Image 1 (cartoon, rainbow, N blue to C red):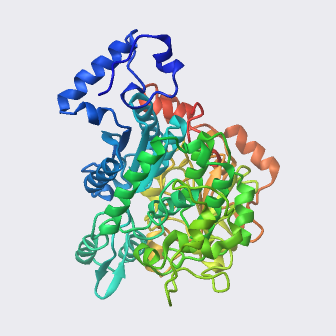
Image 2: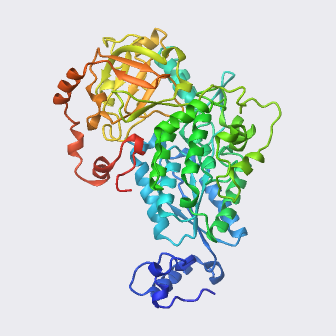
Image 3: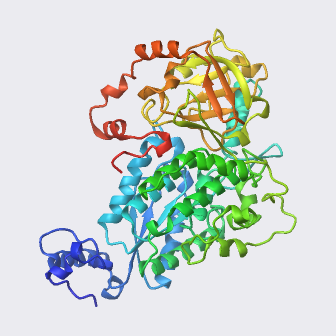
Length: 578
């Protein structure tokens, strides 16, 4: 039976960091003994026994939402986590947090990521969790949970909801959302009619789970394994498979062990762990969003992501995973080919094999134990890569003094060195209004430029960087153009697209000085993005620049907090006070 707490100074939570179970994080009434008494009285209303209440308490985040089909399997995962916790002698306690779905968040899921991170952090801090299982999947949920967990620094394990299975249409294998974008482009070009695009909308995402290509959700599923904060092999299991349920049970068991003494996120998410994650990000041809999220998580851990180091890794580490949009296949194929452990085995000494992981083994030990699948071609060797260098490159120049990113593994090789005339859209709304205007002055070798779409400019740094091909060019057969913005794009997207230009135009960055007709040079090999306008003219334009009106209009609420404190992409778009 759990004895009541006395009111001695030794039992006050601030003086007793080793407090466990119900004694942890007591509500403040000025009498710790009464606080514990009251907590027990109310929790017993749920029917708990004294035996149950004397166990380590394992928090389980419930991110189920009817607006989040990527998390549709969360109730079953929670059930399995609870089973694992109880089998290991702990007391599972689920609690709700914000849930964000990419397609159901206005203005953008990125706008709400930091709010979810704060919610997750404070709920972990406020409640008596000896450890916590973080259940997430859709793009911004996993980074939000890790940001919150690092700041709360209670032992935590990440459980991914998992990718959905592939769809089929007229004998073709389909996957959300690379094929969503490809087929929508064909629809815009008049090659697919309204009736067929409606049929396709029911076949692109045929099961619960996250996008089954190497989008942001899949990228984060791989990165949590590389960081060592998820069980090996658990990041890629399809959402609908029994192995996903077993991974949940195993995560619950592991959480009980973590409750006995860690490690804490701060002990796992070290500089070495982040370098391993950056290496895996390059090798999987991962989402550009992954770089922003790693920067935010690292910042919560008191670290920073060096963009030049990331670029240097990309020059040495090839793309080894043959998945869309950099390759041809889907997450279920990657999983059955051996998943992240097999990839890490192929990466060899590109990784720091001594890095610890959540289950006590090192990255090297996990890689050595990876299953070898005869004749699989999804996970390539260094001798036969999908691409000879990593998926992303970091660009610099007078357009992006703080850096920009291009996913060149999913770009058109012929456009990676290109000089073209700028066609400028002043905002997302301006782009929507004019993009399909037959009178738009645009040619196939022009450079499409979107401004005021960054963290503050949009606001929320939407995935509008995947600028559509103007309709009249799409109908003429144009499939790719150089596109430049301070926005993001989905990891599922493809094309010759320069993103995350820093500083953004809305805070006076040089992207906001570009005018129609200016020449822009892209040279990915030289890592350059340059506006070919003389300095005197740029100085004259600076004198005329005005910030977007909405920056002065947000006077209250979360929008005010966001606009006044959000950082730039190179620092992860977190709040400056976090």
